Image 1 (cartoon, protein in one colour):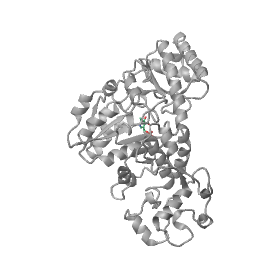
Image 2 (cartoon, rainbow, N blue to C red):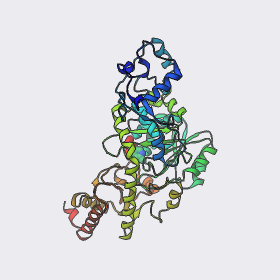
Image 3 (cartoon, protein in one colour):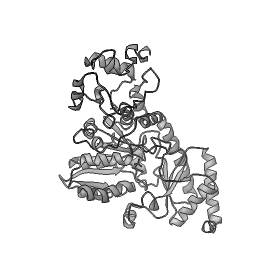
Image 4 (tube, rainbow, N blue to C red):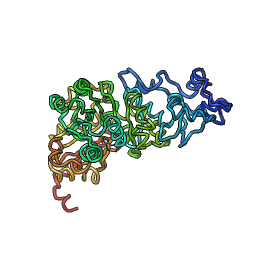
Length: 462
Ligand SMILES: Cc1ncc(COP(=O)(O)O)c(C=O)c1O
C-alpha cells in the first residue's frame, strides 16, 4: 500500500494538478493512472456494475483514500479550486476538462467529496452515474425539471409521498405548465392510456409507495413507458438494497438520503442516480437544473454520509427482519397490518420476484387502526407508556418512528386523493428500528396494546 502515501512533491498541494510544477499537468494518461492508483482502490471506474447484490457492487466500487494515505477519503472543503495556468480555466468552463478527469471549478458544480459519495450511490443503485443533492425533494424536483419542458406531461402514481404529490399537483402547473395525470400503477391499462404520445415525458413512481407499501411492477411499467418513448423515474427511498429499480429497467432512481441511507435522522440529503449523460446535463453551465437552481450538498455532509453507506446493508437487513417478525405477530393478534413480506399482501409474489436476495421485504409496516383517534391513542401509549418508538415522521432511523400518515406526511392530499391512494384516516406508518432487542421491543408493543384495550378513557383525560 506504499502508493497510498502522499508523494512529498505533491504534499503541499495534494492534488494531481500541482505535482511540484507550475503547470496544470495535462500530460494525461500516465499521470491520470498514477493519480488514480494513489487516491483510490477499486476495479470499476464510475459506479457501473452488473452485479446482482448491491452490497457486492458497493464493495467493488472505488475506495478513496485520504490525501495522506488515510483509510478514509479526505474532505475537499473548498468552495473554489485553483489552476496553475489561466488557459486551464477556459478549458474547464468550455467543458473540455471536467470532474471525470479531476478538474473542478466550483463546489455548486462538481465537488470531489460529493462526487465520491455519488459514486457510492451509483454503485448502490447500479447506475452509470449519480449526483447528491441537499434533499430528496431537490433531487426529485431537479430531475423532473431537467426531463420536462413547459407544457410537457407526467404520468405519476397516485400513491406518492405527499410532498412529491404537491409538487406535481400544485407547484409545476402553476410555475411551468407541466401537468400530471395520476394513475394506479398497478393497472397497466390505465398507465398505458394515460400516456400522451409526444407530450408525456416521464412516468414517475415509488418502488414501494409511501405510505401504503404498494409495490410497483417496475419491469412491466418500464416496458409500457419505453415503448412510447417515456422515461421512467423511480423513487427508491423506501427500499434501498431491497429493490434496485435501475437493474429492473428504470432510467433514473431518486433517493431521499435523509432516510435509510443516512440512518441517523440527522441529515437532509438526496440523490439522482442515472446515466452519465443525465447527470452531466444537470450540471450544464447553461441548462443544468442542479447547477442553476443550486441544491448543493456540503462536502462535510457528503463525507459523513459516505461513512454510513458501508453498513447500510446490515442495517437494512435488521430493519427488514424485525418488520417481518412484528408484522407476522401483529397479524396473529388480529390487527389489520399491511406489510409486503406477508403472503396476503397483494404484491408479495411480485416483490419476491424483483427483490435482491436475502435483504427482506422492507423495514416499514402499516397498522390500520381505522380511525385517527384510535391511531393516535396507540401511538401515544407506544411512545409515552412503553417506549416502543417515537411519534415522528421520516424513516430509516435506528429507533422506531410512527406517524399517522393521513394527518401528517400525506396531509397535502385531499380526502378524495387519500381515498384513491388507499390511505385510511387511521393508518399508522411504522418505520421499524433495530435498537434494543427484538423481544424487548415486542413486549413494549404488547403492553401498549393491552393498555389501550383495557383503558380506553385514559387518552381523553390527557
Ligand atoms: C418517498 C419519499 N421521497 C422523497 C421524500 C423527500 O425527501 P427529503 O425530506 O429528503 O427532501 C420523502 C420524505 O420526506 C419520502 O418519503
